[in-house]
Image (cartoon, rainbow, N blue to C red; front, side, top):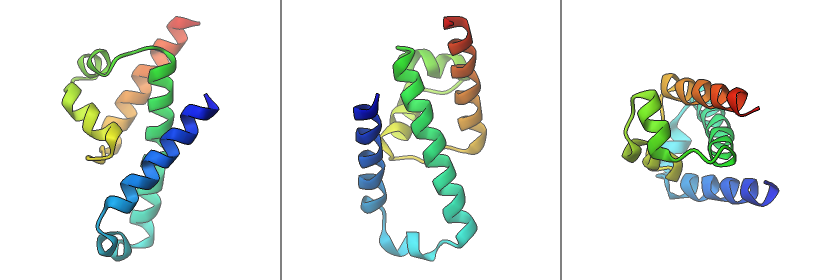
Length: 100
């Protein structure tokens, strides 16, 4: 798990570096904090999804999204809304409770 977390954090660093630096510098303090919050929540969700051995397709079908959308989110091409992140988190929590 530690190795996977390090991989995901380096993945996010690459994503942030690939963004337009001017865009990142132009957002205000609260937007940066929201972005950090989303990234941290997303990393936890990715780790949990993989631990539970749930595919992107299974997750997408369960929350009313597409696999393509989840792929874009996990690769950093798209930043999810808080609503979508909460749906993902809620589904993964339910599955984790069923798994236990």
